[in-house]
Image 1 (cartoon, rainbow, N blue to C red):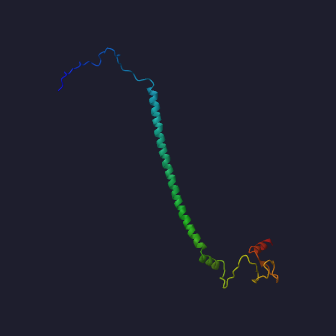
Image 2 (cartoon, rainbow, N blue to C red):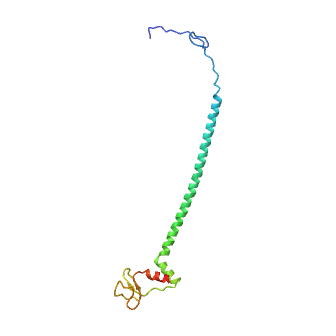
Length: 155
């Protein structure tokens, strides 16, 4: 226990005047609170409207992106189909079939080979000189494989 005696202070009512302190009173709200509250509410409404509008735009963009992805998938499948069809049409077996059945071509029994860069006479004989434009018997030489095609186009 303590050796000091306890001291009790007298209680005062809150509305009593105290010496040296000013009298306290209730103050009314400032008059500019209403416009501030209206601006605050308007800002909140605009903000909520903006958030909802952005969400709607994002959803619309997501639908458009999904449609584009679906179209890309369809076009990719069509591209693969066309690539397969092209591979079939370019195959040697198909080219041979079309040449024989539709164009009336017949397979060669003994194929001839043309080596580019060496002049060849039209009758199939080798020329005596590589620089000669005509063979001795009057046959034209094929020094350039495009030259006969060009000559036939001119006239």
